[in-house]
Length: 147
Image (cartoon, rainbow, N blue to C red; front, side):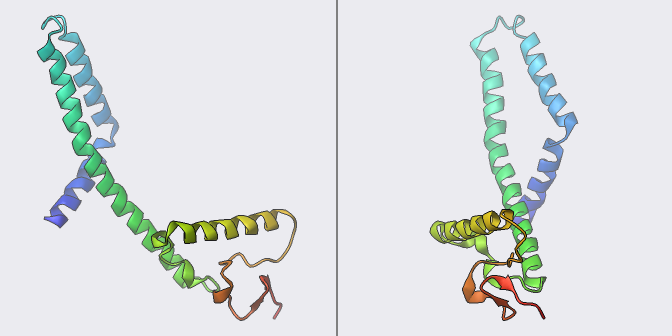
């Protein structure tokens, strides 16, 4: 069932994101609006558009969220692989998205400090993780030693 839902949500996200789908929706609204005088702008006439848009919106929220979750997880895995495969990168940054907010904020503050330091002038500063506990041996105090 999970594989079916995943395939269906991927297909529906692709279909709903096309221009033709947008214009079909606009066409539906135009037809609804044009038929207003025919139905004397009745409560039932209004209920048709309200019900249809509510149901579509309600279901699309779940499908879009499923697609977004899958895309985000795939992107995180790709980024984790780049970190893992890059020499000198710090593996402590793997799975960073699963950290507690306070820990993530500390990393963010450390990287903001690195960015400020880099903007101040041409200094050979380690652009890897500011976490000193995982500093490679060729780095000392955040500055790359010459070999």
